[in-house]
Length: 142
Image 1 (tube, rainbow, N blue to C red):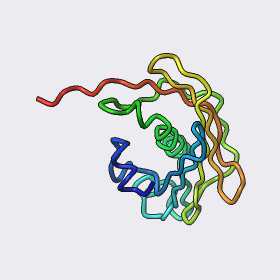
Image 2 (tube, rainbow, N blue to C red):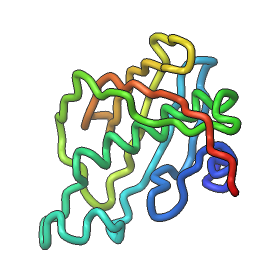
Image 3 (cartoon, rainbow, N blue to C red):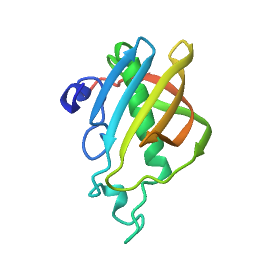
Image 4 (cartoon, rainbow, N blue to C red):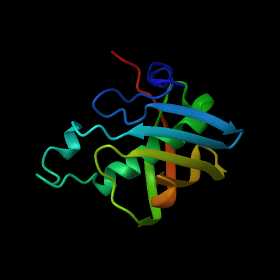
């Protein structure tokens, strides 16, 4: 999937859409990519002269990637974080880095999904951990 195809599934839009491409590798495994260009809003003050992608943004990249595994469930629903567990940051991510995310669903209870995710740059782990999502019904627009 390219960015336009991703937009048909996810509710995110620029500047919060943090995926360039996504591939469902297997029924329960997604591989997504996002190139850190250097002009993103989250790098503007983090840190001047030494830009580093904030950890919460790396978690968001993993979350958006993981959400593509739930595409069929996302019709008229929005995925929200219900928890973030066992997150470990291993390597800094900087402009020019191409972030590769691998994620799989490890459990499900109704509309609560438990996902194991890992983000890598140049084959080295940057961040990994468990993400929990709750799917909520979209409110009808007045």
